[in-house]
Amino acid sequence: MTVTTDAPPTMPTSADEARLWSLIESAWAELGPEPLALRRALVERDPADDDGPSYAIGDWLDRFLDRLGHLCAELTGPELTDLDRVVERKLHDIDREDVHEVTDGSDDGFLYCRGFIVALGRGYYEAVRADPAMALPDAECESMCYFFAHLHNDRFGSWPETGSGISRESFGNPAGWSA
Image (cartoon, rainbow, N blue to C red; front, side, top):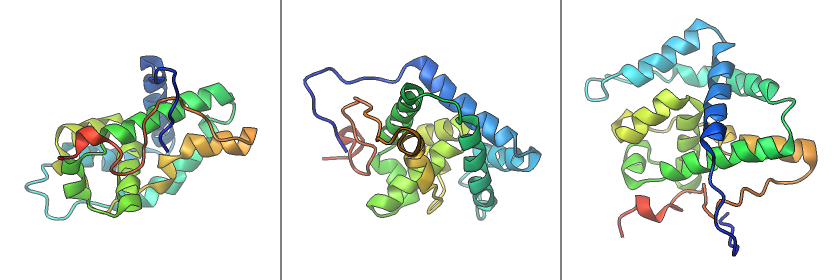
């Protein structure tokens, strides 16, 4: 949903972004060396030589999200809103035609593919952002797309207002799509 206000958009801070990536890394680290190796393999692979990317990391996503939720158990409403704003921005920034050409997917499917990219952490996110061929077709993590918004709603009974003025929904980033 795009928010229309007279106020200038609220941008994520570098501290909020660092906190998001740190929480994601901590949640993955709690799961041990196997998912770390799988994530590293996705970042380091040559997509041109790939004979069938490993989707084994998908088996770890529910456990990752559970750990992430535990790590966020004591966060305040404003802290959850800040994290949601960062995720919203990250999803928006890779809402691009060149990424969609690799991941494919409907409106929702493409959003969930971008959620997967964010959920795998900064290394994979930056790899895909720089070279969309690094993305995996049909790899999805729907829960990551609104993870912090749902935590906020569950704890405080309201959906966070990020104030960003952008949309995380698919095809909502005009700069990412040819006219």
